[in-house]
Amino acid sequence: MTIDDHAIVTLTYEVRDGGPGGALLERMDVNYPFKFMFGTGRMLPAWERRLFGLKSGMGFSFLLSPDDAYGQPNDSHILKAPIGIFKNEREQIEPGLLEKGQYITLTDSAGKDVNAKILDWDDEVVTLDANHALAGKTLFFSGAVLDVREPTVDELVRKQFIGEDGVRK
Image (cartoon, rainbow, N blue to C red; front, side, top):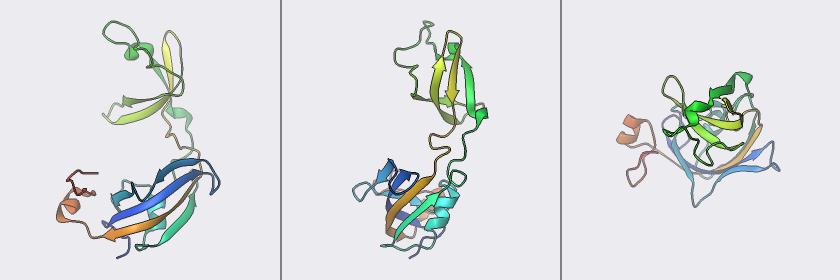
């Protein structure tokens, strides 16, 4: 079976910054392979285009430019938030909450979670970077397709891979 829309795909991969010799950013190996339903809009479209049509046992390697991956950093994603939203009911900031470089999860006006990196703060304002952590990076992917199978009826209904233990992923 080849990788096509709604196929359940199991693969290994590495992601490196800039090229094959770049810093390792993420690895999914045979002990912890990546399993997902292909073509549901949850993965990077350019990433899926490069996997489309592959079969079990085939390897892959390709570069994704920032524009095909997580985009370029955008100044409009640098946010200023009043320090008060970081204070607890005693008007204190919990130790360790505000540390430069630390990621926190915010909720936007639509109720969607947004990860943001703390850049700086003072007595009034916290400056945050809500750009994706990989924005601006060229990503090199390499790996192998371990398995491609038809989805179960439940997976088709839910449009996602469901593990053997019944956990939806």
